[in-house]
Length: 301
Image (tube, rainbow, N blue to C red; front, side):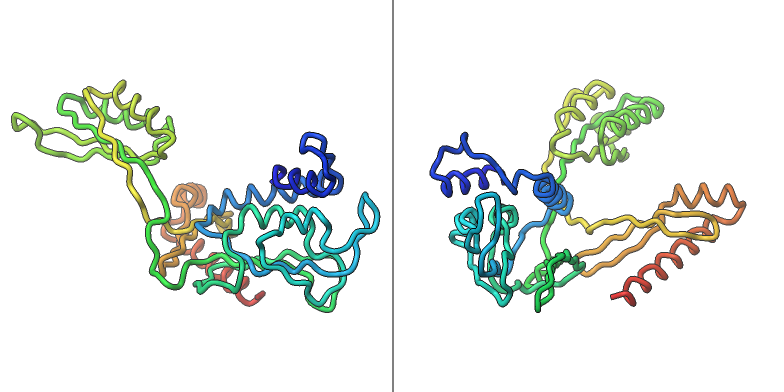
């Protein structure tokens, strides 16, 4: 983003990029805007970001260089090739920082795509205009298709027939501590009619080499097979709800026409031990609290 801003300022001032000085876009609030949006997009990891045509406003804006027409020169340069309109409000509606963010992240500009909306967010401005001064963001799924794979994972496998149960358990614990997401031991019949195990390990692709080396080190296998897999994942978020037995974390999963809620079992078990209540009672209390929380948010709009 700052590369785009430097290029725009370079063009506006007619000087080399290395001689550009950031004024407003170098202020801490602009840095926070850019870093915050980057962190948000990384966490949301959307397949596509689309935006409406950009309303730039009209009139003049006062900045470090004096009174400039709207859109400011750097903003106008950044929005080349992007649909824009003045809008009804007088004043600067799109800053160079906002233009750089849109230019970098948005792949489509135009009317809203057909989508099944899951969540909506609002960012409110401080200036008062006739129209609502807000940015509104929708997150959801493409309505034109039921949805294909939305993630990837690596599966590592090896076959062993000469390890004790204790050694297999130790290897599994070692792999989980090293970043494996899941380890399973599947009973199979191997060569010479021996009973054996297929050790299956799921991990992120960037950790596959490290985890494969641990499989070779902590098992008796002479080789590890690697499979790159697409996967279908529900969008997950966590919420802490209050119950008569203490706070309980609840996991929400949504996507592909599915909505799922599940309390974290370890926390329910801990609350059950502390209160001497059945764990099913704790789970039911957490589910009821989650339902009440969802209803309250729905009524709040």
